[in-house]
Amino acid sequence: MASPTHPDSPIAVQGLWKSFGKQTVLAGLSFELEAGKVTCVLGRSGTGKSVLLKLLIGLEAPDAGSIHLEGQDISSASVKELNETRKKVGFLFQQSALYDSMTIEENVAFPLRRHTTLSDAERGERVHQLLGSVGMDHDLDKMPSDISGGMQKRVGLARALALEPTIVMFDEPTAGLDPITAAEIAKLIVDLRDQRHITSIVVTHDLHTARVIADRLIVLNEGKTLFDGTFDDLNRSKDTFIAQFVKDAA
Amino acid sequence: MATTATPRAATEDVSAFGGPLEAMVEWIGELGVFFWRVSKAMFSHPFEAVEFWRQLDAIGAKSLPLVALAGAATGVVLSLQTRDSLTRFGAKSLLPAVIIFSLMKETGPIITGLIVSGRVGAGIGAELGSMRVTEQIDAMEASGVDPHKYLAATRVLACIVALPLLTVAADFFGILMGWVACTLAEPMSWKLFITTGFHGVTFDDILPPTLKTAVFGLIIGMVSCFQGMRTRGGTEGVGRSATSSVVLSSLFIIVADILLVQLILEFF
Image 1 (cartoon, chains in turn blue, red):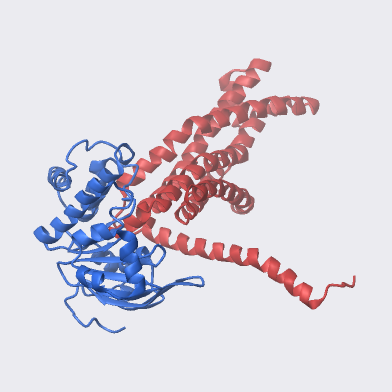
Image 2 (cartoon, one colour):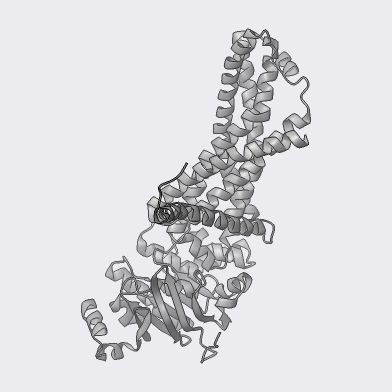
């Protein structure tokens, strides 16, 4: 497998292919992310954006190509090596994926309980700190089903940050949220970049949010990169698909 | 008998049969891989002791009332049905032995296996299926936790430990209510019932049939975890997984029972 062009790139993807049956979702995708920046991956529904995130975290295996995550080649890593790498990555799922048999506090404590040797008191303090950073330091004994979608996203983000990752992946973080809550989530993503220099990759079809948070935009179409640049570059693009995408999102 | 089927029609027949056969072989293969991964996870560090005890409570302790009721009902029915038959053959005095032998050697274990397969199999299939469709299992895996260890191995081990214990409970309540039914028809002391019933019973009559239910527990745990964790298709998929968990584990328990009985008769 070829090595990344920039060895310091936290995420480097080269020649990625993925098909499900006869449907090719990704067709030779390549990109390298810059550390400490927010990259938004946009595209129409069904263009493989969420599949890309699952490939990056090793939940799916590519048909061809290589993925380097924090210098580790995911495609050839053992389960143990992959799990070690995953501790450096936080993941916020589209529906938050909170464990519904656990309280909010237990959800955020779960990765700390699994991967750290913190005492109960230290872990409790850390959980409060994490939930406080996302504005959810209350009703900690509630179950996920007792809180709103926006609150679930915040708790999901707190859980994703529990092990102090250097990379956070977001799958449609503002999907299904009202504009005010979506703006609050966007602000949290920006704060992660500005205050903690975390590298973020955000899959979204929400151009308004992308405008606020993105340092770089990648637009996928038919499994390939159609556009890779800044928001200003996107607005200036002469490509008909891009122009339609921007126009329909306005 | 000569057939008039053309080669093309024969090919179509084979293709039509090949689809389900291929799916079945694929299912067996995937179950085999799943069995291997869970078995490896069960015996590797770290051991999920807290989660194991939680599952043992959910699977074992919470199944006790239902299993006890089933055992009790079985004991009553055995007593009522067998009394009439034995009286006809002049062997009424054998009633306590027949009840106790039937319960401990076969009825108790199989009833326990099927009852737990229904309650626990459906529960595990639905719970893990629901976790799969809401990406909770993906979230667990993405955070560096092996779901085969945390979710599946704990449940499988809890089923293996719980089934023999529940079988003992089913046997006890079956024998107790069998005695009650006996006494209501013709008074007999508990001491006489037990002394007569256990006359000639050895550990080979008690231990192997009870311990074979550990295999039933392995089947229930493995099949329902497997079906749950491979759920696709939203809430409909969750329903399918819950149903298939019960149906498949019940079926495999019945087939396994035939093999295990042969083994027990051979070696004990």
